[in-house]
Image 1: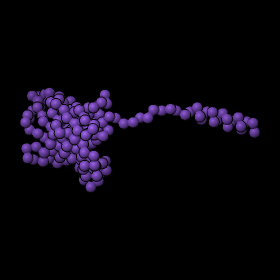
Image 2: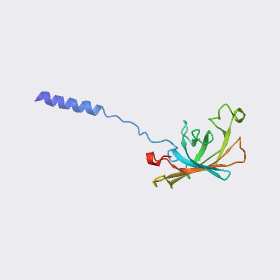
Image 3: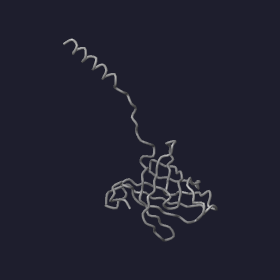
Image 4: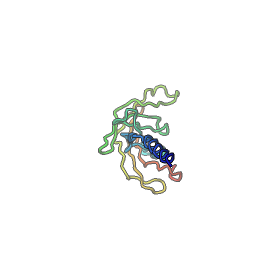
Length: 164
């Protein structure tokens, strides 16, 4: 009986010593505006079908995000500054981190100006009607000055039936 009592006490001590005080992980500063998005692009009176873009935090996790068209629309990835109080974002003519292919060397380095960037919580609907956040972005590219590209759409739900 003594052996069982000692074994119980030792077990309790061992198990309680394994308690870890881990910090709470939390999210990034950009979590309210970060997502994958299905957007249409409007330019020059034409609308082009749904393409996927992404917005996500920068490595320094501050008021900047990456706006990345994943080479689907124009081939750009640019930092934009976020105003978290109204979920808007913009950039001055900033050099893109993604360039055209070698067939377009005159376009290097491409700069992108982001204006009117905005994420609207619960402001959109997915392909199947699910309520999602929506996004609106206007972009101007240095190799096409004066032309405004409007990207607008909704958050990707990750349900296969909502993908384009």
